[in-house]
Image (cartoon, rainbow, N blue to C red; front, side, top):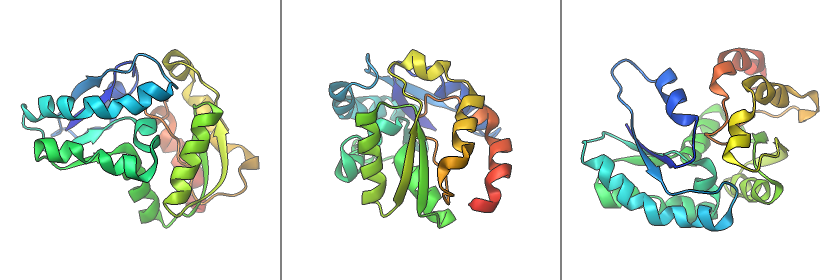
Length: 199
């Protein structure tokens, strides 16, 4: 599996290795991304995806996953679709973290969402609209208010889970935890079992 990730991501590589199967190998490419929560940096990601995907195709990846959530939803539905440039450039099946999230929510038949995110308010509003444009009702976005990649990495897994478990979450049908730079997988098994009845 080839995964283009942003250059300041300190989390995703470790978490991918935690969950991969024994027969899966992970190959990463780093996209130029010097500053988190920056409109220009997010918009410019599209300029680097094709080249980095081509590099991953040289090692014959079976699938390529664009591993940046905000980079997937930042420009709305059309922008997420534009990331199909990966398939166009390489001929390899590809997806994005947002496409995978939408597919998972559709599989669960979950329509009412509370989103947990590390983003600032302006980016939360864009994410909320992205989910709403995909046919979901976003009841609340619970932001951890991070500004930098360092802030995101510093958030403890327990803080992510506690935020998602907040009883003021208005009884959502699912709670997407947004951003591949959050260390959320460490507690995911315990979290899933606690929320199985609401999924």
